[in-house]
Amino acid sequence: MIPEFGSIEFFICSAMLYSTRVRRKNESSYFNCPLPKKIHMSVLYRIFGIIVNIAAVFLAISLVMSLRVLLSSPLNMLSAFMLFAIVLYAWFSNKFYMLVLVKQKPVKRKLRDWIRVNGIVSLIYSLFIILGMAAFISNPDLILEQMKDMGVTVPAAGLKTLLYVLLVFGIVLFVHVTWTFRLVKKNISFFSHE
Image 1 (spheres, rainbow, N blue to C red):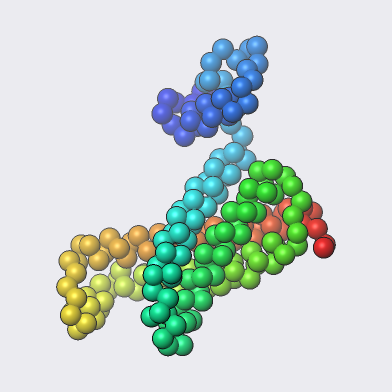
Image 2 (cartoon, one colour):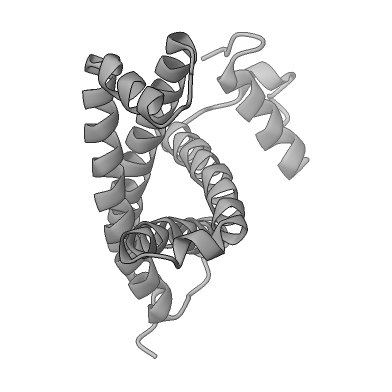
């Protein structure tokens, strides 16, 4: 298999050979790099993880900036709780990725519990995002009218782009959480019983 220059396979093969700094005698160039399917999946999982982590950083900043408003009513507290669960899920799933999947180190059982609890809340929130954004994308006039009633004017194209971005984030979050649950179950031997 010879990866095409500029493709993701070429990048991964180059990174693999640079990181190990070991070349076999029969490998004259980076193009002979074997690329198993497992690497494709781990790269995709990592890309989804990066997207979730970037969103979690923005959510954490918005939670800190709007703390007074979020504590003003029970409904706001519920949404703050769900957003905080996404931030915690991103933190603990990243910790799981680094310690268990990359370094192959045993970790405490608490990590699995934190991933499960915050992952379930994140999963529910991602379903709300997916269903809500799908409904708004199918009928964007509904949200435009509501925004006009609040005194905010938003261009329809910009709103539709935002709805699609949120839909993609909801799908990525849903896939990442279910994938993490499977990886936790697969690597259950790394979790100690302490």
